[in-house]
Image (cartoon, rainbow, N blue to C red; front, side):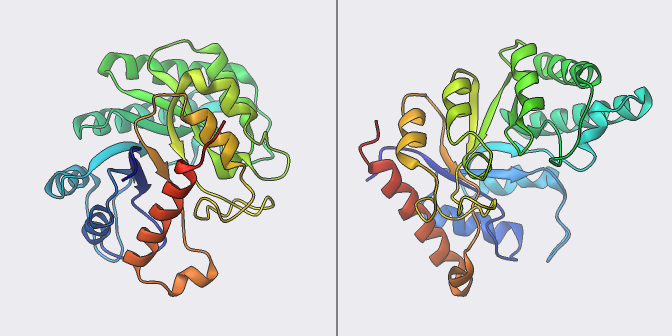
Length: 265
């Protein structure tokens, strides 16, 4: 039996009702689940405020909640009205998540790889967001994406026990990214992980062990940190799309545990 806690994102590549996905995740033996903070509309309508009730029914613990990143670049806008409107939206999400029992939310600093922003508006936005997080006692983990410089700016400039880092291994092991260096650098602020693999070219989000991620390095660093759960954000590869959802969840968990059992240094 593996001594490490495992988790997976509630969307793992199969179109199923939310409750069915949660049930399958629990049956596969995962300890935690990660959620996306938007209402579900397909195949059935479900208000996001109901998510936690379903998790409670199946006795599945919540690792973290990912906030939507549509229009997240508004946080860096020179237009103060546009910027503050999005700050207020994020603050509303923080309060919703807190009321549903969330300890940690994950947020992108920016969306897209080709944007160039002045740092000052973003600092102002995230300062307000983190202040709200402090007021309601919820943690905000900024995730590494293709343009990490803005997330790193937030990590450097805003000191707070409620501000930290979410490490995504697939984002970090594509062309031009750090290949584990940012995890080593910011492990002292680590609050969440999104573990998955890729081919080194694109952000595939494959099952761990399938691609080019240096798991010996990544897991070696993570095992030295007291993280809540080794949680995956992973989807089926082409041949895996023929598998039943329960089969895929079992395979993903077994592959993750194989990676965790290696003698990483």
